[in-house]
Image 1 (cartoon, one colour):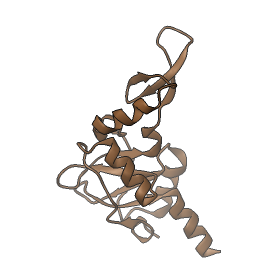
Image 2 (cartoon, one colour; image 1 turned 135 degrees about the vertical axis):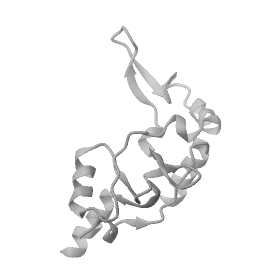
Image 3 (cartoon, one colour; image 1 turned 180 degrees about the vertical axis):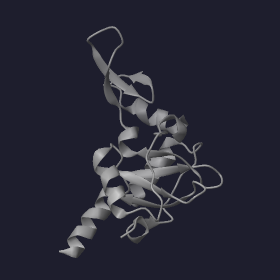
Image 4 (tube, helix red, strand yellow; image 1 turned 90 degrees about the vertical axis):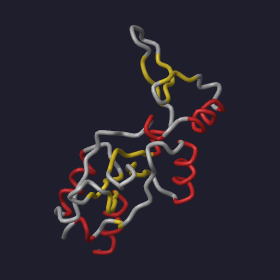
Length: 150
């Protein structure tokens, strides 16, 4: 089987200039865990996953102290309302992952599965020969596939 046999075609994508607020609304509305980020011609620029929208603990440089960081800035975990304000003005390109794996529709399905289980990517963009997003394949797609085969 090939990637094109399991991928979701024509996935919802966002542009790099879209706000994180709008991207988060799409993720929640569609119940997605990630969105490909594309340029005006539909070429893949990156991936925005739910995890990219959440603050994460980081060590403060030159200390053993850990604090929350969001989009490369320190945030106070006691003031979570501040995160919403950042979503309103921060573009997707500030939080997206730029170096992500991708597959082509003709690639073997096993290659997509290998990438999904060996990397932190949960949503694997499928691109054509010119780098345009034509589909997406996720870990959940494989679970559905395995259950169908049972």
